[in-house]
Image (cartoon, rainbow, N blue to C red; front, top):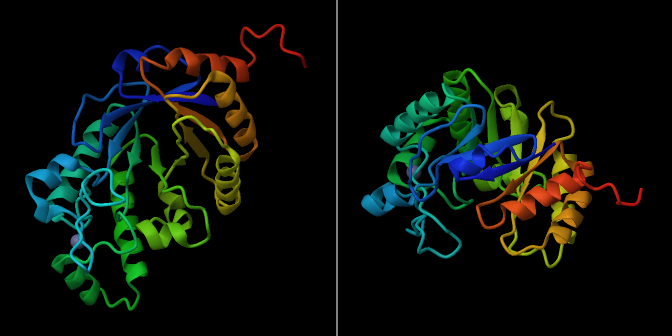
Length: 277
Ligand SMILES: [Zn+2]
């Protein structure tokens, strides 16, 4: 299956491919209006506006580094996942959007191995009775995903950080696919580039995730997007990763939708009568 991801509501209605992911709430903090018949994507804790308004809400490392857009390695602000008001508002938002259509969570989890060491997270870890911080972080995120799944009638797709090396997802973010399996209806991995000048890493990561998730009864979607890639290059990338995944979703906007449509049509055999078999 091939679909598109877009923040443009007209493109979301353009019926390109088999399915559509529509960005409703993004990491800048912008909130939009959910749409029916699409998978509505909601940023979880990735919220630059919230962090800018109140820097004390950002996830923080033991050295005092905040997860903010001006911090090296961070492209947006990330709120501490144990912030109780933020968590409750996020769950309400997921419920509201989930009553319109299926839901995809983007940026769920802790924003790196060194987060979060705020006073509240330290207190909660100490009182948890757990002797391992990775286990506590994983429990924290798993409970949130469970709560989100319980609030919505439709499907829940969870975005994973693109690191399939065994154990790394858990260490980095607190996301453990095996533990999450009963509560999710899909995993999604973004493998985005600007132009896919090289592609070996895309195939390697896709293959790694296929292996890491192969025992789980949860479909995998791989997201690719490349604002500057030619259609031929995207067709090549698509062909390489198709054996590893159940679906591919193309990040797109008004500037490159024609390229994405061409790629999807090519892979689905539409309007390609002269293609050699
Ligand atoms: Zn914290």
